[in-house]
Image (cartoon, rainbow, N blue to C red; front, side, top):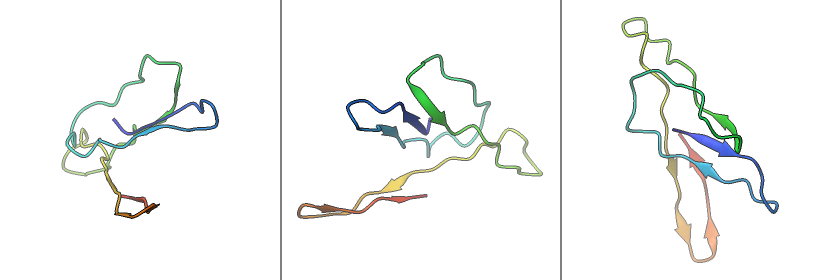
Length: 70
């Protein structure tokens, strides 16, 4: 599941590992700390259960980091 959690001590944690689950029903997580999660349908005319999925590229260069969300 792709999710963003409520901020804690000024940090907003994310779960970006939802690239391997391209099919199914997205359901509300039973967790009050989840501020947002990916639940949109991919609008595939051939398969109404295909959901959006994604991942992040995280190249590191010394102390620098760049996030690219896909």
